[in-house]
Length: 60
Image (spheres, rainbow, N blue to C red):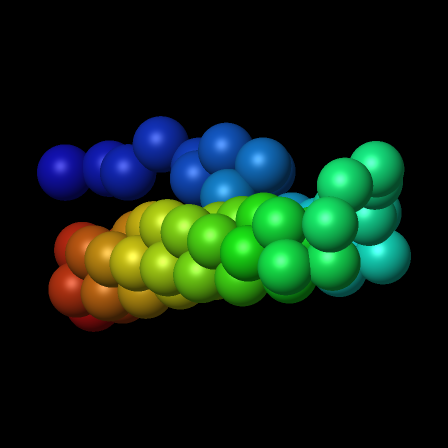
């Protein structure tokens, strides 16, 4: 069994908090930042961890 390479987007770092700054109340900005970082890092971390585990098990 061979694994296809993990898409490069999954290994990209999450958006920098400064990139999420925009117009609006500071509470909205902080909420957007928190939501985006939690979502991004969770998805990226799970994807990379799962892929690396599968690739390691298959290549042994």
